[in-house]
Image (cartoon, rainbow, N blue to C red; front, top):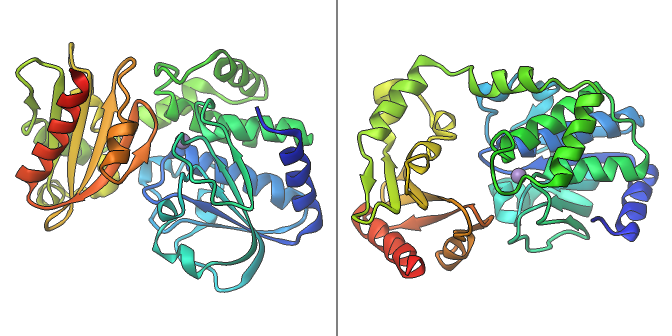
Length: 321
Ligand SMILES: [Mn+2]
């Protein structure tokens, strides 16, 4: 639930200011982009100057989202009245250029349990399945018109963050909001087809290489895969093609925790953690310097892969006891 005070303040911010920058998190996925572009559509519609910034290029599979071409990967030099950060639990999720951003006021809209409340106005609800779900509530309460553009963008984020309504974060409220988005014209089948049945052959070749590294713990509860930089070269893929790969080890029967070790550079690894049922991986990620949600979290670690893996596995084994 969003506080009435926050709703009034947000409404007033949009009304009285002229320039807005919307920021999405690095390695963007559909929830952060759907949140940003629906806000772009709404604020632009009130006649204001709006820009959207993301440090990374938008992955190909997300280019079907309306307004995706307005996203800039160059931090604008101008000063903004208001910066709105979406789906980012902490400032470091907003990229290296964040410190150069000039804005008089920061709004933080997010659903990460580990959010550091870095905004001047924080609209944060860890019970929301997606930031898009939270933004729907916000739009409703400020009296914004949920047109087909907003409905499609928000439903794309919700579908992605709930794994097409399969994950534990899918609540009564998620389904209620999603049904209202469908009533406003969003097309579930069209969105899921674009999200999941739109893969390149190269990505499937990358999947083949990743699955070749699959390891299963002796009790069958932990599955892990590795992704090295040279796999991209060998298959003609890039980082964006790795999105969702962790779902494959997680799909094995009996597996409770899945881990993907992705090489960022020599001796530096992004560790992604996914879990089933009540097993909390965000605590583990936090202990290792990262963060996230109960069933989906991550951190960045340095060292030899062998040592990084041992460290992560011992943390998981400790908690599985
Ligand atoms: Mn999200």
